[in-house]
Image (cartoon, rainbow, N blue to C red; front, top):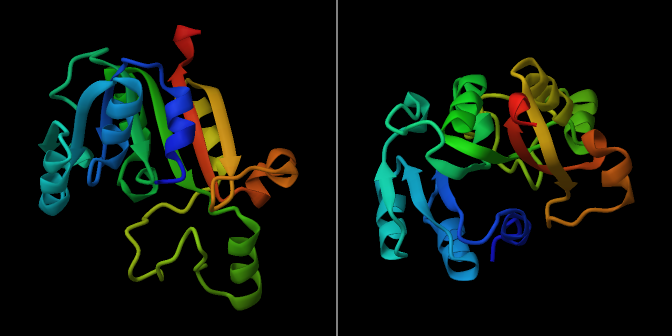
Length: 200
């Protein structure tokens, strides 16, 4: 089971409506449907993953999230979720605003490029990092934005987005004292729950 599913299951209210951006093979939605009775849709561009999502019983729309969410009305969902994808989209700022237009809350997860292993490889080796949470070389990766937790939080502030919950964990989705005290240095993966600042 994906390590992040337990955290997402705890955060999401049972029987909520969900839009999962870049849903992949539908693992997250299938899990939440079974465990929490959620209802919702996935968006995925890869046709092979779309087929797997359908086979898993997921309502999925084949489209590119980079084109926006204009087909969805304001407040269509309780949650809009995007896991491990924010760093791979061309305009993350615009997409975050669209997520919070379409959903009451948003949950995003992403790798932290400020982790000490990344810093060490750049400082000592002078090359882009390859780590267990960033396993691909610079020419193979789909990641086009390298950002840290501090970068993300600064972006949220500039967009009038409030962070209502966050957790920073290691590769196995385990926290610890160092992750809590120095999340931008020792956290490998981040999970944030977001709402418009005007709603709180």
